[in-house]
Length: 96
Image 1 (cartoon, rainbow, N blue to C red):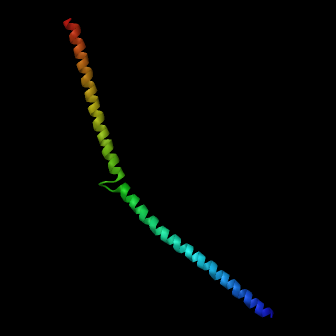
Image 2: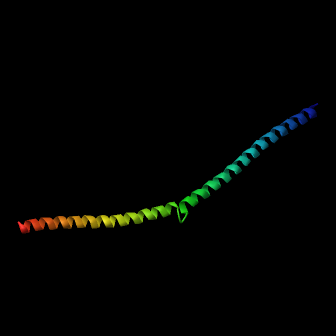
Image 3: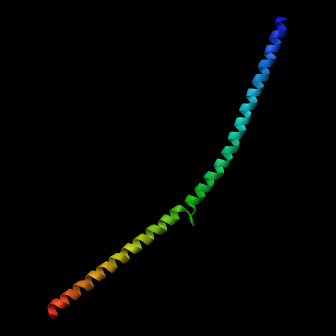
């Protein structure tokens, strides 16, 4: 009688353990699937950032180049405007 109770308890414990192991395996499978999706997402992000033709670094480099060019042009325009304004004032003072 005691042996039958022990065997029954052992069988119940084994069934519960099997259920818990199955849930753990399901969780591991889910993690594996999500890890694959994350790896794909990370590779897409790396491509977007480091792509030599259309990546973020390329766009930043183009913007920096444009900014340098615009800065040079702005200095030329401002210097020319100041020079013209100074010449007009100087001509008005000398002529009048």
